[in-house]
Every structure is written in C-alpha cells, then in structure tokens.
Length: 275
Image (cartoon, rainbow, N blue to C red; front, side, top):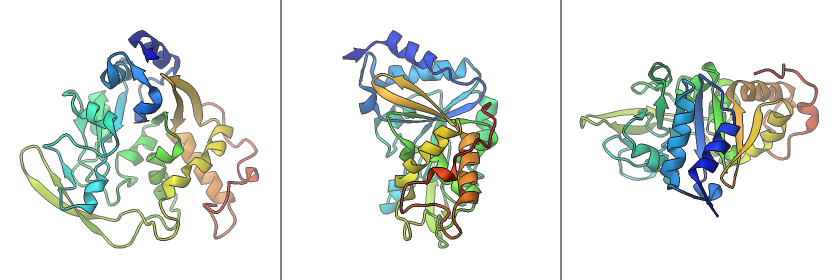
C-alpha cells in the first residue's frame, strides 16, 4: 500500500497538534510505510501543520557516533546525522535552523522567535541533554514529543528530565572533548559530561517502562501516520509523572530498572486532566 498525500494530511490533521508550541519528532520511516512523495512529503506536511499554528517543528540530527571516531563531533558544513533517513531529509531543506549541540543537534522549522529561545547557543550545554539545552527548554516552553513508529525508548527528552530531577547514575564525572565546525569554517572545542552506562547500561532502553504511568496521568495522546502508531506526549506532564515516581519509589531505588514499575507508584490521580 502507498499512502497518498491527502491521506497523510488527514492523519496529521487528526492528531490535533497543539498550537503555538515546539514539537520534537522521532520517526521510523519504515514503520510509516510507503508514501506518495516519500519522506519529503511527510516532512512538508508536518512543517505546514505546525507552522500554520505558529509553532516549531524540531527534527533531531544527532551526531554522537562521531565521539568514537577521529571526526569532528558536529560539522555544520556537512549534512550528516546518525538517526536514519528522516534527519537527512530535514537537513536537505534550506528553511531550517540547526543547533550547535555537539552530540545532540536538531534542525528547527517555524516561529523564529521561539526558535531563538530554544536554540542551544554556542556551547551552552554541560551534557548532551542539559536542562539548559534545547531538551530542557522544551519543558519550559510547554512543548511536546511526537513519537512516530517508535516508543518511549526513542524519547531523548527523558534524559533531560532525569537530569532536572537529579536521578542518580546518569552522567559521568569526567569530561570528553568535543568539537563543532561552523559554516564559516571556524572550528571550536569544548568538553562535556556524557551519559553514564556503567551502572544501568543505556538507560534509554528502559524508558518504555514509564509509558503506563504516562498514560494513566494523561501525558499521551494516540494517533497514526501511515501505518505507524503515533504518541503525542506532553513534556510538562511527563516531567510531573517522573517526579512523582521518584518521590514514591523506595529509598535507594528511584528508577526501578530491575523490573516493571509497580502500579501503586503511579495510581491515584495527582494532576488535572487539563494540559
């Protein structure tokens, strides 16, 4: 089956994306399926829908894999990313602004004033998803995460929330040198603290455990694009839920990574249903 542009437009409109907010999108094109006009058509429709509502659409263009090579960590003179095909489609457009986060850059489309507020700025981040980075600003702007064909394990924003809440064993103490090459050829260096995988491994692989709690407290709205299941997730509500889980967790075990999160930790409505 090949989805037409009109079919995808109707599905996107059916998501009822909130107006006037930043929306960061993580996507599996394979899950979406075949599209009339390909990924370019999908991105065009999403940009149109978000920008007509005076919002900002954000596509992650991470380059963290360059940490393990001799390459420049983020080379803004090139269109490269390590998150599959969709970020490359976004980078091929000329109407987006790419942030200069050395490992977790993103390209943004839409409301320029909001983009200026969200932009990382020149090396303002101490960690890849610092509360002072784009990912922390999503919370302060009341933004949303749009998961298309992927689950919460792809929700990079949750790393920032865990930093905001001071969850333990998240960041290493030592710093790693990183570099950014700007479009004018300027090369700059800094150092950041990376994710600590020595205790729990890659914690993002366990983010799926938060989904039942997110759903119970109304953080997720479901939809569909192509053949892909879609979750539209409130950044504010997700942080509230993770804070609640941290407060209710047994002492010394606030993250519950050895098993599923017990329902007793998130049952009982604590928030208004309104977002």
